Amino acid sequence: MKRIAVIFAGGVGARMNNSKTPKQFLEWNGRPILIQTLDVFEQTDLIDAIVLACKAEWIDHTKNLIKEAGLQKVLSIVPGGESALDSQYNGLAEAKCLFPNEDVTVLIHDGVRPLVDKETIERNIESVETKGSAITVTPAIETVMVTDNGSINRILNRSECLMAKAPQSFKLDDILSVHDRAKVEGIHDFIDSASMMMHYGYTLYPVLGETENIKITTPSDYYMFTGIIKNRELGGLQDE
Ligand SMILES: C[C@](O)(CO)[C@H](O)COP(=O)(O)O
Image (cartoon, rainbow, N blue to C red; front, side, top):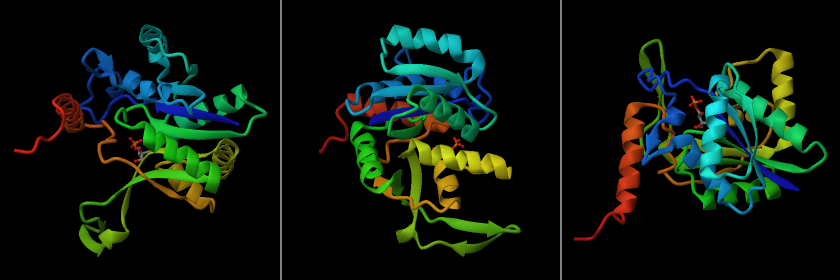
């Protein structure tokens, strides 16, 4: 039995005001966001290895960063693909090559979610190994509406709504098999692994995560991230 994290970081930062530096390499306190993300998995005892899917032109730079940070669990870095799902597929296929005959639990995580915590990772592993899947979620704290043709045509019952985060975790053979089916059927527009697994009839089990596990996609996400870290350094909210 192996527990592998597949971290995808193939994006170019188009939503980060097209910053020249892809968002996963933006720094805080001299440490790139991607290294901070990898480090959480590195420090979690239950994780055996990490596979990283990264933009091809950034692989050499990333290897240097990983060496400097002294990370030992990153066994392989593969080129990312056109979409996030393609990058994930490349990472998953590499995990299969590394551990062809093992029963593998795989945790798929965005390189730009550095505030994931060990407990969420452990809850993901437990859920996959007892039920078959784990989708990290937080309760919706704003009203979710559906639009069509410019007007709002549906307002979802907020008490039933969850926000999908990451990790999203499965048995490696299950998630690889749905990628293969989607490729054969020419379906390329799944937003994430959860959508793909649900489409192919798998039951998804939610695992409660922390609201601080934000995805750093836009400049305001980056400001929130630095705000959270500064606040942690100050010891959090203090009573008067
Ligand atoms: C996987 C994910 O983080 C779940 O919230 C999200 O779908 C990734 O979205 P992105 O558009 O690939 O950043």
